[in-house]
Amino acid sequence: MAKAMTDTPEPVHPAPLHLGQTSPLPASPEAAVLDYVPNPRAGSLYMVRFAAPEFTSLCPVTGQPDFAHLVIDYAPGETIVESKSLKLFLGSFRNHCGFHEDVTVGIGQRLFSEMKPQWLRIGGYWYPRGGIPIDVFWQSGPVPQGLWAPDQGVAGYRGRG
Image 1 (spheres, rainbow, N blue to C red):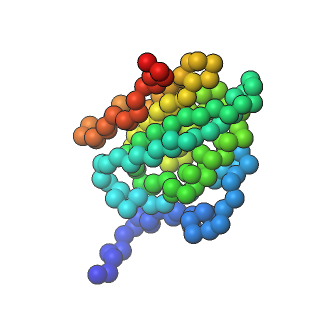
Image 2: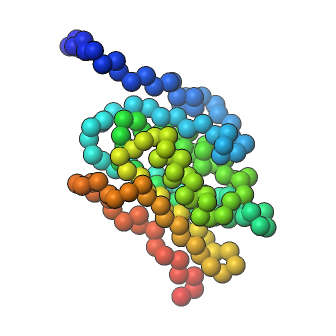
């Protein structure tokens, strides 16, 4: 079936840089390029969840590794993030020094700013260092009316208790 001609051109999305290519791990989060592709269900309200249970960054004080279980939920707008580029972006934090709060919120804000989803939230469930687990949460605003946003499913840290 032929597509009707319209006065409004379709949005132009550059070809993904990583999809189907050999891609090295970016040297830093700033150097990481996130790829976005057209949302195949644009106009629909649905949620996508990415879980990164082995996320790593470095403590800015000691230089020692910090570990977290990240959960990223978003309701796509016109684009979706390409998962391989997201994996490379998250992997670029392995040599990045940052406090848990800055890392978690920074990831959420960058994704929200670039991807322009209808809604986004991130939960950073950081494993204890110095005996204190730190959980960091950020979301772009209220959950859109009608969106099913289930609990992120990560149990609070209990240690030996």
